[in-house]
Length: 468
Image (cartoon, rainbow, N blue to C red):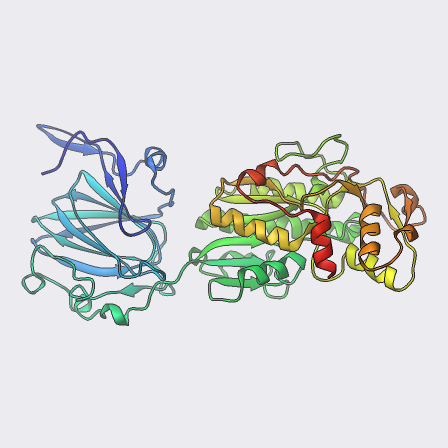
């Protein structure tokens, strides 16, 4: 019998992510009514906001009609409209809970959320039973499915009505046993800009496996109109955007301005659209250049952006676009150092070649090593930290570029007195090409990222490790 008057509540099961729900059902002499799907109430009560796109109904004439066990690469919300079913769910995902089983009877006062990759099967316990399921993807022949035989001896589902007494399709009878099942793989992570400084660090951090996909500039064109259909995006959990146009001075030229807006705004908009439409978490790396550097204290995540030049304007515009994605992390950073050409390598090379450089001493901040950035990305994703903006740099003292240069000279055994400190205006005085305005203060407050449990290393200690 359907139980009336229950409070909406979700209960976890032995299968991670499989949630059984008690639904409020209101009845009288005329029949009953329930809110079968109410996004605001259900997400507030603990149901994932899984974004259904299709509603299907299965009607069954006879008691004992049995269907399954099917694992699809999408999430489902299953509920009963009339009658009663015995449901059995088996975890067919890759991982330690592969083969775990949960069973329950479902009537109109109950429902169940079935996560992607969990096999589902149903046996009707009353005639004229109809159950409905919302799914968050459309059927596709390219999707990866998995199936398990209803009579598998390993999972040993306790069917109320023996399988030899019920109606089962020939296709369901032919499904493999558990030992022969192909597990549903985890959703993938795509790293865009994989050949840049941060992209290389992310590749080293994530490693090489089928779960991670790396795309460089030659592998993916975000401005191509076909980008949105270039992959089966429902198979991706995360996109990390490590790509950017970073030639700050060249961005002040006519061609550079167009290239900067194409990469940092148009391309980001394409990623944001795909992420929003497919429930993907978008991790986007931003810059201290979104600020004008006039603040006399560290910039927090809540400070209003005031970019000075074209590069900063494009990064601020990209941030605004990414902020509209329901699942997003915007990581603001500064003075990035990784593999390839960068300030630290340049200073080390000058020291070793006996060249005494002039270095500006009126721009202040901290270095950020790409190893630290990639660790922060991993941390935020692993901890499922609240979505939003996070400042990420290395920790340590706030210094001008000239002091960083002196640290580099000292670390490679050269005299730091060989560095001549100059103002930014003097440094660029002889330049004939356009020069982008730089923020004077690039200090980013790290309170928010620390509160998630991430502790950045001091930049001077990281510098020693980098040079050694």
